[in-house]
Image (cartoon, rainbow over all chains, first blue to last red):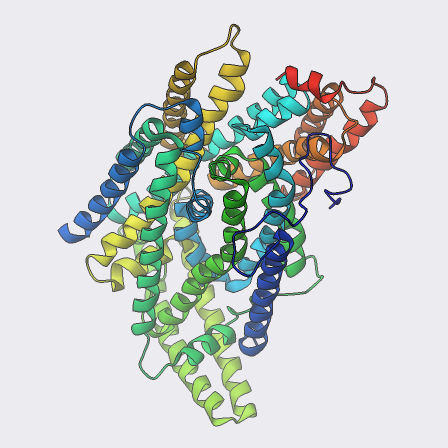
Length: 57
Length: 571
């Protein structure tokens, strides 16, 4: 995936600066929200891997 | 189903529709009709996005998928969180900044009118046909099970959803989605609780999962690089990003849901809500199917779950053979239950050698059961080649009808209708809007008033509803229908995604180059589909890569694209 920050066309709005609030307690920037989403995904995959390792033959 | 079930079913559905109509009452502008009041919160958006994506097929087929193949299917959704992050970072800010009604309107501003019409046309063709399936697929299952008239089921459910979507617009769709999701969630949780309660007392949850694992249903994630393994972490993540990006970023049925947000923040949070919860939700539905599989090891399931087809054929010429198979299957299930209990005892004793031997016998019994089911399907197909031999869609509904109390049966059938309505409403809303905004308003010379545009959007919504109902009524004429629509989607999604990739990331490419590239790529995809025998999923990649590569190539022979002001004026 090409970085949207480096190759934005003219019509692309300015990249987020982190100043924009997310409104989510504990998350000041969207980068933090996205990191949380990826961590949730990783955690869920780890749980599935545990289920597989524990119960699959 | 008795009177209580019908009261729950009809009451819950009518109440939700009436609420949606009431919340969206009054004449409004095109902006309000297409984007609701434009103040939807992240919860409403998140639920609406989820409800549009989850059709009745999800709740009928996925438990059956878990029953048949286990948890591995969940990996198909692994690319979704990453795709939603990309949509949130790249696609959404652009759509909101330009204040567009549709995703294709953005292409008109970025390139030109003909590119916009091309993308909108591809969406209408693909989604218009898919809308028929959204009605047909659950109707065929429910009418078979309950003995309802198929045509009547299609027409009644199609007309109800068309009417409230047409009159209420996006606001009605958003409001009804919330309550439809509540019915769906309540129904599925109730089914899970009852399923767990009906397992034998001596079988703990750990035993239940162990039995599922011992019989091959618990391989939730696989990191295998073997191309013959159907579902893996790699195919699900890499392929899933691509497919989810096409769906959430460029399909108007999704774009319209998150554009109704009150702000960029609300829209983003609605998408992130789905990024976090979608995989657990699909896992939960699959797990329900896996638990049903274990449940049916201690109960006596039918040898073929579509009992209407079974009864018809059992009364025919091949009846004696089918009865023999049913008797053998029951005996095989009894033997299997004994072996499962023996294996569980051996497992508890900690004697590994005894456990291994017991597992080998248990797995052999499972293979015998599977072979008898396969033989039964072959006999049914031989007697009537027109029947649908795949019966996994009937597993969950069989459980509901046999083991749930009255009232809850009505609630679970309401789940199927709620999910039909929710996905169909999202599709119709998008089809009507795209036709009104990207074709009618764009092509009409002399301009249109706001009232004319709202009226046009309503008329087109009704027309697409009629098209979907008509397609659903004649759907049984098409062989292997759902796969046909999936193939159709894969043939067009790639090129449309390619258009958006060029728009976002290749600013030197202009409208003429990308339009020609898209047409050539689309024709190439269709020619390749008719000449090659590769999986249809690859055409998503071929279409996208072809459109992007050809755009770059063609642009080298064309003058530089006009500046954005000129391009915007073409829309």
